[in-house]
Amino acid sequence: MTVPRREPLPQHSAVAMPQRDEGKKPPVETAPEQRWKLQVFYLCFYGFMTQIRPGESFITPYLLGSKNFTRVEVTNEITPVLTYSYMVVLVPIFLLTDYLRYKPVLVLQSLSHISIWLLLVLGTSVLAMQLMEFFYGITMAARIAYSSYIFSLVAPSRYQRMASYSRSSVLLGVFTSSVLGQLCVTLGSVRFLTLNYISLGFVTFGLLLTLFLERPKRSLFFNRAEVACNGASPTELDKMAGGDKMDSGDKADGGKILWNDIYPARDNQRVYNGGVDAASTLLGAIASFAAGYLKIRWALWSALVIGVVTAIQAGLLLLMNTTGNIWLCYMAYVLFRGSYQFLVPIAIFQIATSLSKELCALVFGVNTFFGTVLKTVITIIVADKRGLGLSVHPQFYVYFGYFSLLALVYLLMATVVVIRHSRHAQPPELIPIEGQVQEKSPEAATVQA
Image (cartoon, rainbow, N blue to C red):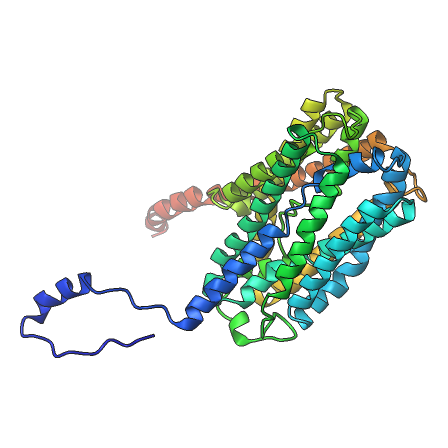
C-alpha cells in the first residue's frame, strides 16, 4: 500500500486533525488485493455458469419418454448406479482435490458433465445410462473442489464471506437453470432432447471457463500453509472439507421418479419439474440463511428442533407417497427440501463446535463418506434389482419408516437433555435446611452451656 507522506503537525493539531481525516481519501488498493478480488469474481461466475443445465430437471421423463426405458429399468437398474459410483470415487477425489490443488479435479468434473450429456443425447442402452450415472457420481464427488478452491484465494478472516459468495452463486445458477428449463418446456414447447443439447452447450462452455482458472499454490493437507490453519474457526474449516452442503443441483431425487408415477410425463405433456426445482432451491436458500440467524440455546434445544423437523419430513414423505394430486406432491417436495436445508447448518454447527479446528476437515470428510455408505446400503437393499428391487411407492414407505425412526431417536434425546437440564436448574433442597440449622446453632450452644 502507498504510505502517505508525513507532514509536520501544526500548533493546533488537536483541532485540525479531525477535519483533515474526514476529507482524506481511502487508500488505493494494491495489485494483489485487486487480483484476488478478480479471482473470486471469476470463480463465482464459473460456479454460476456450470449450474446452467436446463435439461437436468427433466431427465427422468426424458428417459421414460423419448428414450423408452421402462419404469423398472430407470428405478432399479439405472438410478442406483449413481449412489455406488459416488461412494467409490468420493475418497479418491477428496484426496486428489487437495493433492492436485483443485483445478485438475474441476477439469475432471467438467469433462464428466460433458460425458453425461453426450450419453443422454446419443446413448440408447441401459448400459449407456448406467455409465451416465457413473459420471454423475464423479461430478457430485468433485463438488468439493469448487467449494474448497475459493478458500485458497483469501485470508482466513474472509472465509465466511467468501463461502457465502460461492454458495450464493451456485444457488443462483441452479435457480436460473430450473426457471430457464421450465420456461422452455411450458412456454416454448421445447422438447426434452433439445434441452439436453442446450445443456451440452453450457457444460462445454463450463469446461472452457475451467481452463482459465488459476491453480492455487496451497491447499488444506498436502500443500499446507500456516495461514490455512491459524485464525480460522471450525465452521470455516468445515466448509473447506465438507463442501457445499446445499447440493441443490442433485439430479437423483427420488421424488422425480415418484412424480412420473402420479402424473406420467412425456415430451408433449405439461411437466413442471423445473419450476419445482426452482422453488425448492429458493426456499432452501432462505431456510439455510434463516437457520444461521436463529437465536436459541442450541446445546439445549438442537435435538428437539432436529427431531421435530425430521418428524415433519417423515409426514411429508408419507403425503407424497399417498396422494394422487401432483400439485400436492410438488408442494410436499418443496417443503421437504426446504426443511432439509434448514437442518444442515444446525447439524454442521453442532458438530463443529465440539471439535478442534484441526479435526474439522477430516471429521466432515469422514462424515460425508459414512453417510454415502449408509445411502449405498439402503439403495442395495431397497432399490437395486439384486436386492428387494422395490417399485417407487414401497421405497417411499421404507424412507418414511427411516425418517420416523430418526425423529423418534432425536425426540428421545431431546427429552433426556431437557430433563437433565431441569434437574440441574432446580435449587438444591438442602440449602434452606442448612440455613435453619445454622440459625439454631447459637441457641443450641447456649443450652449446652
